[in-house]
Structures are given as C-alpha cells and as structure tokens.
Image (cartoon, rainbow, N blue to C red; front, side):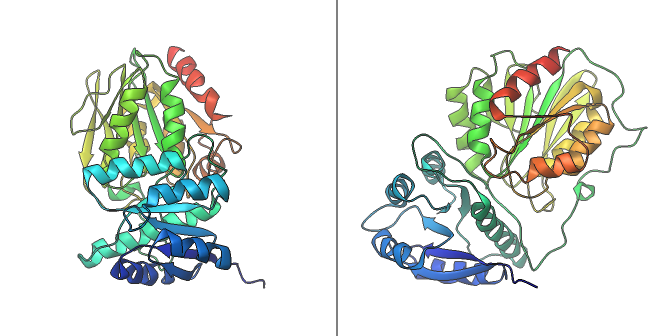
Amino acid sequence: MVEQKKIRVLIVDDSAVVRQTMDKILKSDPSIEVIGHAQDPFVAASQIKKLVPDVITLDVEMPRMDGITFLQKIMTQHPIPVVMCSTLTTAGSETALKALEYGAVEIITKPKMGTKAFLEESRIRICDAVKAAALSNVKKLSGKRVQTIGRSNRVAPKLTADAVLAAPTKATRAMTQTTEKVVMVGASTGGTEALRVFLEALPADAPGIVIVQHMPEAFTKAFADRLNTLCRMTVKEAENNDSVVPGRALIAPGSKHALLKRSGARYFVEIKDGPLVSRHRPSVDVLFRSAARYAGKNCVGVIMTGMGDDGARGMKEMKDAGATNIAQDEKSCIVFGMPKEAIKHGGVDSILPLNKIAQEVLKQCAG
C-alpha cells in the first residue's frame, strides 16, 4: 500500500509562541508535516527556495516586511497556497480581507489559550484550512483571489445538523407556496471571490438571500460591508430576526449558526450558538435544513466552491422538500469539494459555471 504524501507546511510568524503552538497543532494531524519556521518574510523567502513547501501559514503583522506585501510578492512571482493568520480585531479583519483579494486561499485566527473545547475547535479549523489550501488551484496574481476555514483528523465527532435542528418531515415541511422566493447560498474555500461575482451580477431588487460563508468571527462584518459597497443589493452581516426580503443579502456571522425561519408570509433569520456541524459554525447544512423545513418549494439553493461536504445533506433535504438547487461547476471552483458532494448526494438540479449562476437563480425565482 502506497503511503499518502504529507502536506509540507512552512510556518511564518514573528512570535515564537505562535510558531510553537502552530507547530504542535499542525503536527497533531498525520496528513500534515511541518518542514520549517521563519520569523519574518526575509527568512521565509530563503526557506521557500530551499524547502519548497506545499502551503505557507503567514502572519499579517511582522518586522522588516508585513505579511500583505510578502503575499503580493509570492503570488506575483511563484504562487504557493497561503493561509493568512490574523488576530480578531476590526482593523485586522479589513487587512485580512485585503489579503484574500491578493491571493490568500484561507484565513484563520491565531491560536490562543482558552478552554479545552476552544483549543480543539481551533485545531480542527487550522488543520482544515491547511488541507483546503493544499487542494486549491492558485495562480499568479493578476486580479483577485480568495479564502475561508476548515476540518481535522484526530477527530471530535463530526456532528450533523441534528445537533441544531431536527430533520424536516412531511408534517413539518413548508407546503404553502408564497409569491416571493428566497435564495440560500453556501460556500467555503474560494467563496469570498465567488460570492462577489455572484452578488455583483444580481439586480437591486433580487430575491432575498441568506449566505453561509465559512469565515472566522469578526471577519464576516468586514466582508459584508465590503460587498455592500460593490453590489446593487444591500449586503449586511445577519442579525437575529433580520427579515429576508428582496434587495437584501444576509451573511451569517462567523462562529454562529444561521437558520431561516418563517412567520406567516415573512421570512427571517435566527442566529444562534451551537456545536460545530460538519466541522463548521456557521454550517451550510444547518442553513439548508432550515430552508427545507420553512421554505421548501419557495427556495432556490446554491452551493459553491469549498472543501469538504458541508451542505451536501442539507441540499438533498431542500430538494426533497421541493427546492431547486444549483452547484458551481468544477472548472470555476477553487476547490470542488462541497459541490461535488452535493451532486453525489443527489441534491443538485443543475451544475453551472460561476458566471452563469446569478442568471439561473433569477430565472428559477421568476418561474
């Protein structure tokens, strides 16, 4: 039996404590090998030439050269999948989003001491981010690129949406058709750029949209604010009880689950805590299950680029409840994991390139 090749990772951070913590976290996953450490980009540059890593984890703020400048140099010369590390500050989140535009594949928050459960969740996310980056299709920086978060090996149980919301039954499915449809979207690695392309193609009065993009806490507001400046629709980070209405796209806040709910003809979102579902919080499976239960045939589902299988089961539940579902095609995905699994589970009606999805969504909603 041929042994699987490990993902070779170079850790770049000016903090010795962070380097040691990242080293320990990454080495806990047998599919990952840490091949070196660097305290600044100048040391990292020589290490890259000598060690040829598969993935780099890169700090944002460092001496001699900041991580964003170094990222630009990497992506314009010899592209390597880069996972950016940042602290959870508003200013930092804006900087990190800029990093995604410049070519970072994933974004993670720096590991810090906390409860055992917090550290285990951090381990899962960091290892998954590296694995997603290793599978990504990076190219030389000539425009914009993308991002998100992840999964693991020495495994806490992989929970399903049952941990947050009971599966829909015939008795609980939304059977009444409404005049307005709603759109549910799930994305992960590569999703920030895919969502920009999708949302920019929609008119100001497009159907109400709820989005789960795997992203750390505090980054989702900056991401939503950025999209709001680019799109004709209003885009905002979802808050509890926000209405899902035409002309508005709601993005689930990082580290919270987002559920679609319905009261009479009004759709709204519920934002709640809960365990990781399919290794994520927010989870696409949780959003899609709630859509199956409360929207049914009044819903159009979209699953985009991303690693893993979050959303696959929920999308099948949506289809069984009467929804029409679209998957992004392999060629236009950064990582064809989530769409592939949704297709495999039988929940997808059509498979389209990214630049055709908005048009199909409008067609299905009009129909």
